[in-house]
Length: 443
Image (cartoon, rainbow, N blue to C red; front, side, top):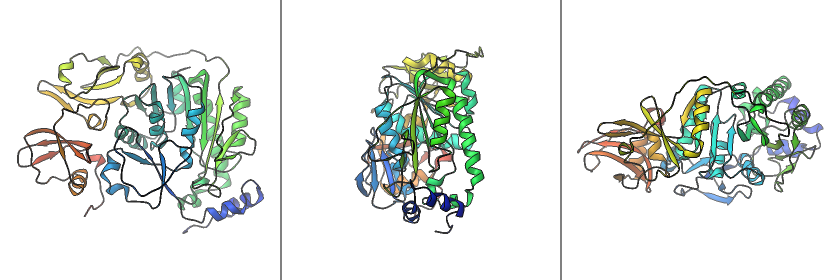
């Protein structure tokens, strides 16, 4: 390790019988690698070691591959996600949520928990994934597009902005920004950023975040609070403060593989006891009545798109509605069109369902999202299967000799779509988004 553990942190741990020397020893070992598979796409050929018992699609790997050089990673067939974070899957399974739940992932970038929630919803309900930092919100949008679910939005807002959506969400997941103690093994640089003062600042910020977003939770709804740190200030003490300030009910969940926290109100994944980094999770339920105070802007920003003849690349329009935003058309769940209109009016939306593309007189100019969504893409679209070498070159933004007829084609690897090309007969235009392209050398 290039950075020693902070002395004050070490002293804290040694004075805390809940953690102790075993945690310090574990933080000096090699981090495990874990992934979560996309249940709707091709199973990638990875060095699987064992399933993660608390995550339906999670696996530990025996070694860390170069994910960037795997075309199926770019196709959204799996997501590298720390095993402790995947405890969220076991928690969601225990919550008494409606069949078509409306869920907010408040601090969502880069997208691990959002893709997990989307898999849990399995095409039902609606997921709003939010990230306040613009550059991180773009990464979140990319990862959700690659995951392929239609019932997802991405917003780029401060938590306080959600008071414009009072009583909307059945569940809010707050994976709060924290002091990052649980990342000390995986990211040694995090050690140099830690201080007692930073712990205090993080605990205060976490209080503000939860208090800001609480009005948007329905009465009877659940707030899932998590961090990747070990200290009581950001975890048990904050949880108790939330319950007292908000008159919230602490919900008992069972995570037998994890370690119950110091107050028996939440659970820890500790690297001294599991093949994980550090993670903490707990659940509160809203018992007071949600107060309605919607601020309607009066703007009509979305229009219904009715020219289905322009959407000949769609497999199934059941339960979907088509909205036009500027010059582009989006597929969204019909059951939530009214709510989506409200969210679009009140928030800064940067991903709206599945973007199909731009309709023209000659047909649809398809968006990358259409290529990557198994729910709306037609199997009748002409495809060209690429070799591994060709797939990496395509993802790198290159062009090369490729046989095929002129026109728009979907290129695939292992029969899993990667994106679009416009074939010109003896060459093609590579339509893979420039901002997504592989930047490292691929030879």
